[in-house]
Length: 121
Image (cartoon, rainbow, N blue to C red):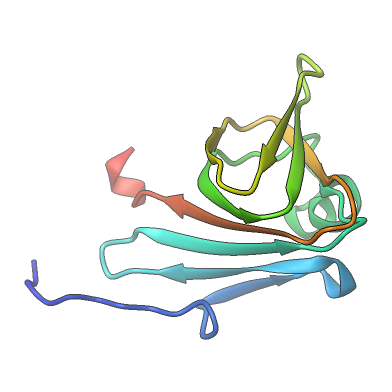
């Protein structure tokens, strides 16, 4: 283990999901396997239309998300219960796998998402 501080920037990601005019996700990975993501979803973005095809068309999002909403309003729906939750600027959140989502209103949604290293699970 090293005692040096590691910094990364979302403008030079390790991976990017491009959702064309509806936004994208920049993914960075730290030495220990921790991942950070910056998601930008434009008005009109839906998980079904814009992200699902990039993930191989699963019935719902297969990932758990822990994050913070910087801007906008995102409506997240748990597919099994059909329960919707609104996430807005200033909210820290945890979303279980098995959801879909859409941007509510005319403001861009910006999120920072965190993922622990795989060996931590």
